[in-house]
Length: 377
Image 1 (cartoon, rainbow, N blue to C red):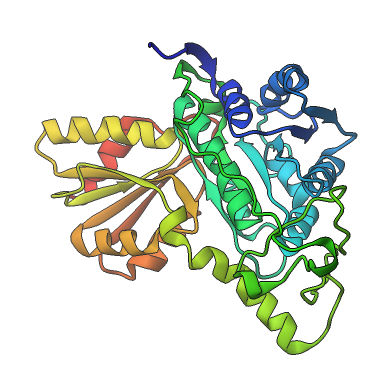
Image 2 (tube, rainbow, N blue to C red; image 1 turned 90 degrees about the vertical axis):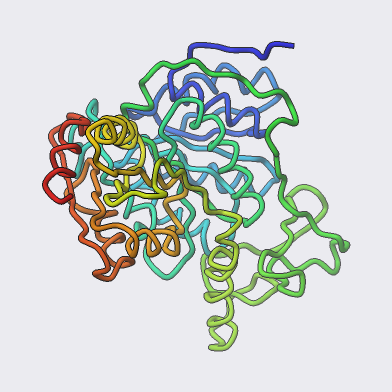
């Protein structure tokens, strides 16, 4: 049987992917260029018994998502860079309280209001380091409308599996592009729900590490009572300043992601086997990079593309291997040097790392990438 297909905008594909994953709560605030995610879910969530709420601002939107998630809901918010800036304190709260949720950031220019209707890729470090304190981070960077659908599903799976906020970063170009989407049937894509307690309410502790680095999470309203706080805490959820417990909690929360990198990491490689010049590109810029690779190959230049789909945790092992193989790694991105610094850090001088930055509201085109490759080959 032929699968259902549609011509969808990237933001619309995101909303449909959230529904496929079982999202049943959206709390948000309108902001260009992400508003279509909210518009679609405001119509579709009530049809499946879900809840949609437009809050008074981005801070309240993030708070609503945390509260709804603690009742057992799969929760989503969608925003852009300035909205993520406002959400940061509560993103940190979700990190330390280990609250599953998904945050969509349709990136635009900045800082501040910047260029609301133009694309940008300047929030990629914010996704890792935006909120204060040591914490784990997972961020995904799809580059097509179909991939926005599937990566939104994967973001929910990772949030539920590792009990933490997960960010999906795609830029305005992909968010507002319209492409053919093929809808997977139920069961075609894995859908993961959080682990719930196997003990009764009287024995439940919300941060009981005897179950592993990701403790089961009960839902408020299901008969379980427990304490949630933004402070460091013991396994019962109540605050502690005991050094050993604080240290254990901090390290465990980072370890649960670092130790699962093989499960979380997803990359695409194109013609890298014999490549002498590697283009490291993500989001819509990777589309220009792939075209550039094809054209360069026609001219006899051994170029290849490495496209991270999981940006955080950073794919250190594979990038280091490519650094030993290639003469140069070209990093085109719509910012003035963010992931370029990560590539330089990992490559450690094994190959030249050359940045292409653009922040004028226009995309990086294949010609720019080809010219830079020819300079260094």
